[in-house]
Length: 180
Image (cartoon, rainbow, N blue to C red; front, side, top):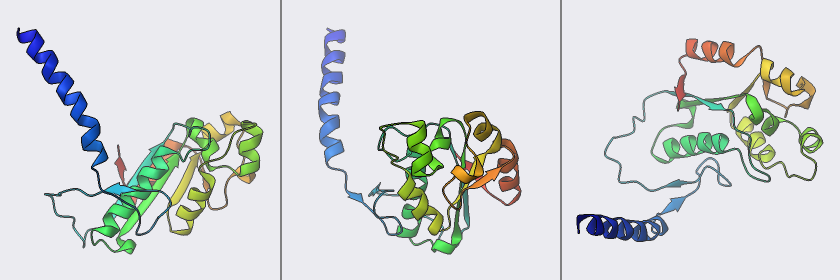
């Protein structure tokens, strides 16, 4: 009987989960309106509007065909959330350190199509918009070399570095913290 009740409770919880997800209030912006969407939360931890936010987002997984790299979207959401909740944009610094297959998400459309014939580069426009907004993109030179990505392949504004470990150490010295 206990097993039957536990199973019934589990099924009811699963049935209620999609209904709860449909009720989420999603917003875009105020900085990035085409990506970086966020949901309204009854926040119990005040956001420090006077605090300086220096965040490193590590991107290793490549995006699916036609999709924005999820770590880039997460970084845009971080900026949107903070600004929407009263943090001045100039108090937010974001660095995205790219290595592994994600390296192709910060190359030109031409280089991407050379690597993935028939696929659509879903990150290029967002990367350009984020760079224009002051987001720093770094690529691990060791990973880039391994994948055949050269400086001239990169979206303008992306910075080739010696390695992921060296640029991360440098960013830590500048007061940046890794965001899991």
